[in-house]
Length: 253
Image (tube, rainbow, N blue to C red):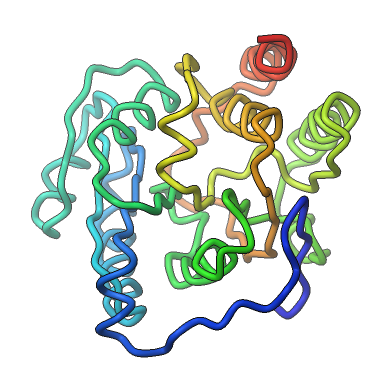
């Protein structure tokens, strides 16, 4: 994965030390994973996330925000030694906002707990921020990837493309995957945002507000696997309307 798309980033090379002890001093990474009834996948995701961060050589915490699950998602996450925040069922956006409030890291990574994202690719979404070449990095399922397109339902691809185009029209920045939940963001940037989304529209709200604030936004290609267990909680119509509203409201706010 050698190709990257950068928006408003300084492309001059930055010398980054490879000494693990120095990295531990400079970077504390909080991984926030919102979960709703994902007992079949969340344990593996937590284990792989922790292993990846250990190999990366940074201080870290794994925060699983349980959005009122009716299964054993929270218990399994706790057994894998994640920090579990238990909330009433209010939606993905609310869960992420709760995680952001508790996160201690200078860098925050978000990924889904259903197995569609690969924790082993966390270094990819962190790279540009760690090199001080971006403030916000999106793991794009569509950037330089024809394989991922075949794994995502056509209605989802169509909606994503429409939202990408709208965000591009409003902000002047071309984005290939505005709806990806696999991201890395500076916590200082998140703290400056006034987020209000309760559902899936949170990704669009964060992106539009970051671009309006002049943040350096980058995309990097990631792999993607459609969930093989459980069912998607995304309603293309109802959530699509909320996402559309969030994009416009965030731009006008």
